[in-house]
Length: 358
Image (cartoon, rainbow, N blue to C red):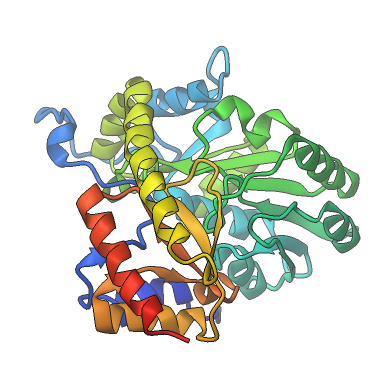
């Protein structure tokens, strides 16, 4: 299977790695430590189940408000990225049609294309309403999946209730699965799985909880979809770590505490970001983030945003995400859920770069 270069990962791990000391590119809040977990030395090191421990699946189903928790609706995966990959590979066949949005996660269009699908990528400019009319025009009898991301990465935007109603109606009209990456959703009573029987939710402990090293994600979907994804997982990673699954059960048992930590880390940085943008009213346009730890900043300068990001690393050792890696232009994704001193220093360096840029 031939597939395009993964530009997001190439930027982070090939081009910028080791060249910065201020990271404003992170997509989650500050990571937690192993000491923040209660690990039991008596836990066994055997395999877990291919779909995840029953207790963890029940805990995940429980945060969606299921009574009793429907463990059969959940599969545990290596982060949300594996969850999405398993869905694309198990749901889709050559000749199917998929709709995704941009700026967005490259995986949403490249993996279906590599699987032989036709893909329509709809532009959704951050800070503007989602074009439901364009979505309605794009779908057809071969449309198998509509992939959305609300709250969005990298945009920080969410679908409004009227937009949700239109999107679910469009999906129902063509019989397409509606896949929503819900990494930044804090209240899963608002999940896509409650909006339509065709809804599929993907999330993880990486972004909100600050635990990406656990590689603990999940799919919440109708049973037949879960079974298809689990069967594909048997050919790939087999199962997740039983140790980290037990740790995840603890995390979800204390979910309110972790969500509150997330809110505490996000709020102060938003004020510093506002002050920074106000210093550059003719050069930056802030798209107000709705629940994400990062913001989309449109750049009103002649220099391409990819070049801005490259210069920020090379000349000021500060990392941001250029719009180009998300399939867009003239913007950067900037993380503001950083310690105040780190964020202030990074924004000061960005000030200097803008002063030197046409």
